[in-house]
Length: 293
Image 1 (tube, rainbow, N blue to C red):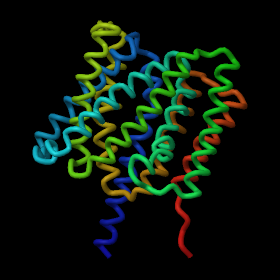
Image 2 (cartoon, rainbow, N blue to C red):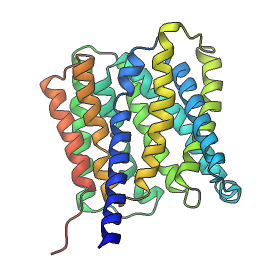
Image 3 (cartoon, one colour):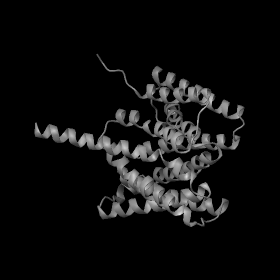
Image 4 (cartoon, one colour):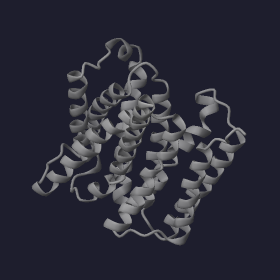
């Protein structure tokens, strides 16, 4: 009885850590909106701070496994590259479009990965997955079509779509990482993302010049939204089922929509709201499994 109680307590803590990490991720757009730097510069500072914290924690806890890292060095490097460019595209979409729409388009990434899974991962596409993908694509069409119709930035729409494609690529690369632990993967990919973003920033926007008003938001997005959130994220998902992780993950876009509406006063048009329902509903439908009777 005591073991059962301890097991449930451990599971509840895992749920709590995972949900808290998603709620923290949902505030990314709000923090970015208060930082005067270019998107690539924000990502550079975010990955630098978050990567340094997780790397330090990894070595302090003795969790570094050089053998697994060497074996999986290529997907780790590709994953880190996709992660850095993914955030640059997403943060640019936050600025050029808005947080709500950029987040919704970004979260079509997992569905794009799902639709490509027969080619990339030799996984069979079920009828449920195909229906879900079709519904999400209709939702994306509703949002993208309304963005063009109301005169929002086409470049912002392209940036959001690029972030979704890079998110799908990140999923693909990380699915090939099987031996390296979650914490180690996060630390290494953040370090790689820092190097990639540094090269990108030097070529495109230059090195960041931080003004005093930026410091609290940069500290928050680096320490809390990257270092702490990734620690909570990987600590939580290691003790939860894959289905639970997939279903609960949509707290992130929903919370981002709520936070942006409350703090940034962003509103969706009826067509965009319908597209949002299709994207989130279709994704949830695709990740739910029928219970056997």
